[in-house]
Length: 101
Image (tube, rainbow, N blue to C red; front, side, top):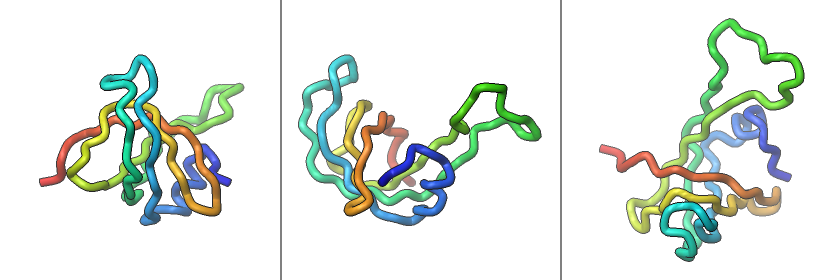
């Protein structure tokens, strides 16, 4: 089962995930059907300020994921299903950040 936790994604660095679904209502280009797109997890970044502890009551550590995928089709910003095969899937908000040089 995919865990929405930095440690889970760090263990799966370099893994290929499959993105399917469509941008949800309220997202740009909502309703556009996504194809099955393979994306490789290339970076997991801790977003906590250095040398700080999480505030009391915070259960999740903030983190950012960076995936590399094909140039086409470029997914619009939106919520998609991210599948890890037999380990399950989850819905994730994806924001394209540009093409690699």
